[in-house]
Amino acid sequence: MRSLLVTAALFASTALSTITSGPFFQVKPTVKNGNVQFIGKNISHKPIVAYVVVAEWSNHRSVWHGVYGGPDSLPAGQTVTVGEAHVGSAGKFNASVDYVRLADGTTWGDIATDDAKEIAARFQQH
Image (cartoon, rainbow, N blue to C red; front, side, top):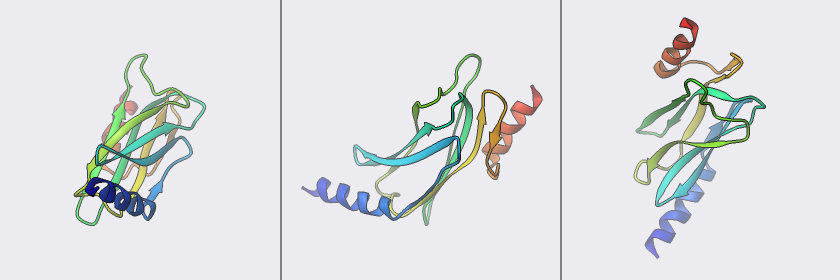
């Protein structure tokens, strides 16, 4: 019963949270095994080769990224687990997409985090 109450409270708190997605990559929180998982979906019509997502709580910040190499990519319409937060750190949060790079070289985002700057620079070297 307690886990049901925690899950219900978690759903209520995630409903109050803010998710800022870009035109190519959408991020949504979901509850699984008592944790909040952030699921990213490629909503563009082209493969994604890199992404950076930031989630911030009042006392915690997480930066998650994915970089695909060689023939690998996140195909259009596919999803990926971006990151996870324990119930203790969950609550009201803000999450945003900081950087996305498509296979054709198109980019989107503020590139504000060190992760995004480093990943963007890697692609500039090629």
